Image 1: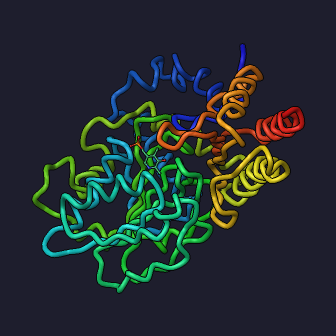
Image 2 (image 1 turned 135 degrees about the vertical axis):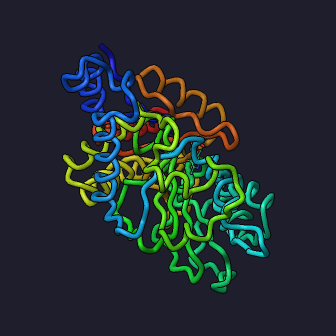
Amino acid sequence: MKRVDNFNAGPAALPLEVLEEVREELIDFRGTGMSVMEMSHRSKEYEAVHNEAQARLRRLLGIPDDYRVLFLQGGASLQFAMIPMNFLGDGRRALYVLTGAWSEKARDEAVRFGEVVVNDWATAGGYRDIPDRIPEDDGAFAYVHITSNNTIFGTQWPQFPKTLSPLVADMSSDILSRPIEVTDFALIYAGAQKNLGPSGVTVVIAKDEFLAGENANLPTMLRYSTHVKSNSLYNTPPTFAIYIMDRVLAWVERLGGLAAVAERNRKKAALVYEAIDRHPQVYLGHAEKRARSQMNVTFRLASEELERAFLSEAAERGFVGLKGHRSVGGCRASLYNAVPVEAAERLAQFMDDFARRH
Ligand SMILES: *Cc1c(COP(=O)(O)O)cnc(C)c1O
């Protein structure tokens, strides 16, 4: 069996321990004589998994009792639309802070449903930085939308803004990578396929008070209250994805929780950023230092020819997923929770070695 050093941006690396555990339980799930994929989502065995995944998320993130934890489908991309559908209209306005391609996509959906004001401070600089103030926020917005980590450009909010209006965050690519203060947010959403598990499930964490403002005229599946009332079991949820997420959450608990995970992530990111900074004549980091993402390290090489050589040698060494997003080019190393420290060490060593030879 071979396992590569997997720097894919999403879907991305899963912990080997979790994959082994899933393999172990695949055919006969905990003595039931069936796979978890083969059982009713109304069975007590599945419901235990479902509720356990929720409880683990609550413990790990310190989610207070007046917040709901939902498991939805449609990815972060459906949340781009579902949030404004529910909380805009009727003369309400939202503020979108643009920090990259995903926040632009979120904004593009919101303008279909209501009045949108944008903070585009980071746009002109090519999304290398994160604003340290949101001066447009007058407290009268239905919500302020941010993207906590910009997967494509490789920037991340170093600390979150204290907003006057309710704060909504797309945390798809850094949820569970560091401790957060959930009470700073009205709603958090994240597709699972970067830090939480496989694709197919989207986590929404939202405050009751905020959810109370939803639009009651929407189709059943597009109202948050449908999923709150049914404990995310209104229709068939992606049971296998939720089960794997529960195993990933148990793995995070074994690592020591989010403080320990954040420390591990800091170490991995530092290894790769230090390699970039040691060889400024070969590597050029995209992000301003203060806004560097701990999850997605983006960089270019001195020439396109060198970049091609770098990617081809990297592939030969068994490094996977280092090519940057098609929209921006360059290179990107995604260092999500499941990427081991040793993989970042091997990459940094290869980057040193490549720079010395070129
Ligand atoms: C990957 C990603 C998305 C897209 O998620 P889907 O689940 O594919 O819809 C949205 N936002 C961010 C920040 C992402 O990294």
